[in-house]
Length: 431
Image (cartoon, rainbow, N blue to C red):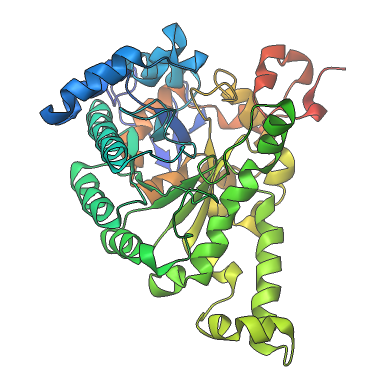
């Protein structure tokens, strides 16, 4: 099936991110703001400069893949373009934003997570070559379905000048997803994100209109190998990622670059109203609570900001709302209905695939149609530059029906295997 075209070849009627489907029913145009892709290890070799080929061959021959979901049939979901298209269409999705997932050349583990420090400068140089190889592979992968994939380029905080050049390359190469901003967990020897050291990155993204994406995972410190370590990581991983909001705000990044757009993905949604209220109170006290400790420490910073944190959020921040739950949808007006972008997290274990229709019903039943349309596709289309007219014919075939989404989820009919996805909270369990 080509990128566009209904089954009868007609042009469907579109109303925002809703189309009239082949069956005459209204259907949502669903864009996942959280997908993951990457090449198989051998796929990256052609994208490396020839000077790295011998080193790559030696590394690839000895590397043992530690992730079961990157082996065998499960692994191919990351790089098999046609399989991926079929899987997502069967799950009601017509387009996606692509974060990394696999292991780039010379990396010890997937690059989305915080990395062990490189042993030598040569190690760091090799890893940078590996990230660039991923970006070039991703550009070709997106070109296979250009109206349906927005790839996110990887950069390194260890070399700001090289990353600025890579951002410019990615923009020219059509990676519309923007840039993945890594975290700076304690102990890796990098300045924190509020340091002026990173200003060239943010200035370049603002100049080019490139979204800055911050995904959960890379900001958390390394963990040990006990059960307690794993549980603490699970409970805290999103908290570490949220810190980027405070860091960029305090650094004045949003103030200096009012058009810069920042996305916080796979970090939940419910944290936003409380955190914005907390930050507003602190900034207010820094400005006006005479003699308070907040003012003593923070007046200079607070006076440099023309807006409250909640106002910067409303102007410049979005949330990639993977696994959004009903209680989070209930907070949508406090977060901003125009700030929320649904995601399936395909092909991760916790993905809503192949039960995304049920996940969408669980979250959005009873919510006004136009608001659902924004959160399922309209907001992502606006931010990442998807052409809704190009996607409409596909959604007319595969998009979830508006009337179906409006109905509450049938709890008894939810397969037990769907519970791998956090979107299915206990209130939807069978009795």
